[in-house]
Image 1 (spheres, rainbow, N blue to C red):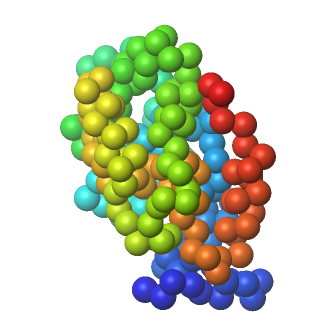
Image 2 (tube, one colour):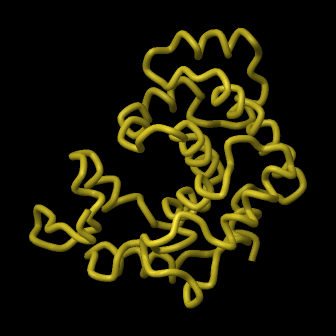
Image 3 (spheres, rainbow, N blue to C red):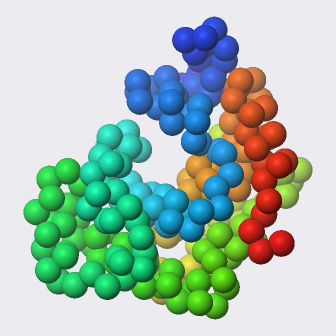
Length: 203
């Protein structure tokens, strides 16, 4: 895949966003922009877990269905899900019906509640793992990093599931902990501006 494509406005974009029509808007308005909202962070970690073994296009196409099925990823509500909820979700054709992944989201919601009690917020904990941008690989050349490995290890230690280093790295790319837009991408400068003005949680 080419590092860049020419977008509909004539400006260069990261090459991957040309592989599906719905990727362009996601790339231009979401991917890499910093996020401090706990619910959005939990949603993305959950969806990255569901993506394991699948394509992001599959998950993105079903994202609204996931949001409806999981109460907009309110982890306080999800933490109280019962077997009846699992049965309901396994019958929902609008989402990925994988028992292990569904149960992982419920488990992770319970772990998220515990983490928030200890740390104040999910965001404050996660943003501690923001890497030094001067010491990282060229954009889109890595699938893990020292920080994604460390965050994955800590989450697993706390009992989270489906949070391997590659999953966590993709999460960090998407949520703006790193700017992984290629150098020539027109959106890179917007993300950099957003990151500069972003107030890091817990600091």
